[in-house]
Image (tube, rainbow, N blue to C red; front, top):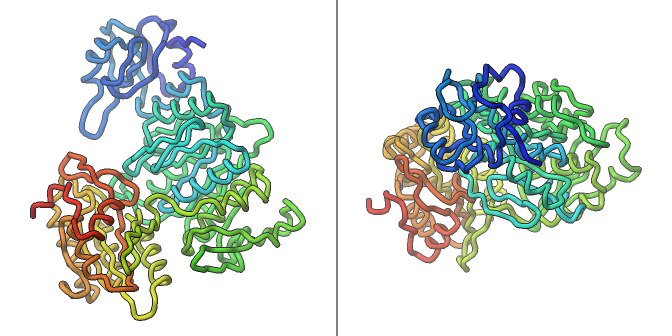
Length: 522
């Protein structure tokens, strides 16, 4: 159905609109975008203040490319096309994009997944169960997007896509006949309103740990950003026969904060006595993990459900939490217990999450996305549980530049505590000096009793660091590369250089380090 500018403006919260200039009946025949380079004739350009550039400086360029209307925050009245002034252009973009695409989330049962760690794994598990139950289901994660007719590698650098992209992806799912979708939601994406216009039905919190304080400023602000998902759950439109359900990790210290948001049902899951929906009889094996679930006495979903054994090929206690969250979310939709069991069983691995790399070497090589202190601790603990007696764990990791500096100390300390050898290396240093980052991490290692050259090494080039780890490994040892996982680039300065830890690990196993980074010549 053709759109006009007033159709889009009407989707904005009333408090957002300051004023308009020009004809509100102007036809909008192309999408809402945030970059002037992406403007198509008949579209809307949203001029917003970025971290380093001001979108208002590109308004003339957007008009030259054919923008039919402009949305911004400045007081402008001399443009040759209609202009809408709003309080916060970043917040407005999601609503405008949703309106252009006819609010696709209103025609999908949406599961939103947030948390510090485990978002991608939990999202993937929910998606797999839904696909088994329904034949097709949508997914937007930092690894890929399943649109029903195709699966696209997103290659996203630990972030939620921009609001126009989110709405376009959801619209394509609707066009392909999908009825359900899972959306991974980061704190940045939530805080910046990139998910505005997404009507959520199931909200999942995996956990909340020390992360992204460089951006949010405080843990309270970080927690509030995650809380926006649950606020969206309570305020978004209802859909026929679908309850609003929040799925919260009861073993997380912040569970009470998230449980305060309104929902038809609050499900607190976990492994401790605090959890009403508790995983019990947990068994780990070389093939995966099995568990049962104890339910509250007043929760009736089937006479034999408490006797059902769930199995996931994924290992580690953290994956019990991820699997349990997915199980309870799907049962709450509702999905049959049989589909939950079979769908959960089908996910044998998650790209870049405890992913084994086998090139015939006599030791175990693993690539994991662990880039937070909690995730690193979980990954190394899982490795120690897998490690044969008398064998060594060799961990390769770094800490990103222009990000929370406290992580450098915390991750170095975790490496010294859990790995036999920690190799400190590059992980997106950005415009910071890599040597300074590694020096801070090395100092933390020494403070915890680490000895450079014995229990930890500094190897700035990541390709050489992986090679060194593989050279040190003896039969039966475990080498794990943490921090990059599925990502396809690494940032030095302001340039993203091609990089894939999985390919780099394969190269190192063959004795030829991947040399695509600017540190390779050191």
